[in-house]
Image (cartoon, rainbow, N blue to C red):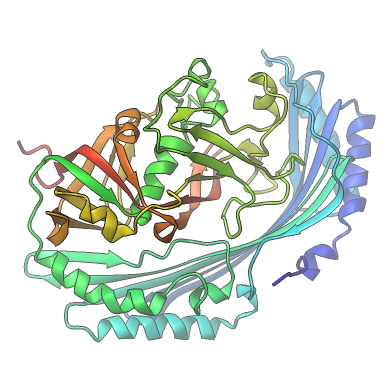
Length: 499
């Protein structure tokens, strides 16, 4: 279903504000100026044991002006959405650039981008979740919670829903882009309290760039997942602890997305690789001298960066620098071939054009190069999960994400999960506990032995990927099939540090 931009946002004098700010910035001496308005609505619901515990609505709006004056950045923002405030904000941005020039050691230059004119883009969804009464949302979560509480193994249930509507306007004089994105994340966690302690399992449904229909039948089978959850939790309560060693792993898409995010997504951000995030978010082992030659993974590995995929959390029409959304390769046949770029890093790296990765989480923040939807492609004729498991003699099937750890270069890592099923002779043989898999990025991806087919593919991801100083959060999706990895080191997390 095609939607229009929220009437309240569309009614703002967006072009008048932009004209006022850009004219003032240029008159004050800016060689480059761009202008943004953003309004972000958020809503969070939390239930405990089918009873509402918290409910919050947020609505933030403001404008921002970014300039380059004699090779130095300047930036300012305000919550006052008037032409006078836009002009004053532009003057402040130019003044700040002149002050900062005394400390600037590197001239700011931006890669060119074609003019796109006056354009509009709205994300793909059916029902705007902000049009659904809060009571309907609470009632649905309470109904699902009550169903779980009706099972003897479930002692408590936590339920939540986070939803966001983000409306933005960008203008640099050549491109004026009005956009709207809707996303939401529902999750339920069933808790079992026993004499030995407690165990818990959560729904695997990922956050999605969808509307209310996501909870009522389109995109995920919530009733089916909730029906299975208590039995899986009961089995987990009595599961034995894993024996550490090397195992073949079949990793479900609901777990592998996070490994992609940390070991591929962040590692292929060019600003990291060039050292511009070293003080906080880290660097990358995937440095420019390795581009086109590094054997990142096995020949089965095909990784694409994409800001256009339907329902992706990082999907847009144009980024926060007016660059059109694109899809491009990061890894081809296991070889590292591409980076994520904004206009500044594209120029620094000698690339002809940005890949459209600029994003600012609010009008109070400068755009950064942020991760697009980074996805591992399935094998077109690959097996289903059962087929992957059937090919494993001695291994573990890993489902769902949980904790993780990775070094500042995105090279040495450790991941856990929600569920771990022993594989013996091609069949599942009960759950295990206390499992973490450990590897270096290149060793892990070079151990990729088999990819699942399109039926195993899931577009997962997260709402809040952190980066930058001051810190910013960005939503991002990762599509991946299930996959099999040979001979991966598995640790027993209950025994780590005790031996």
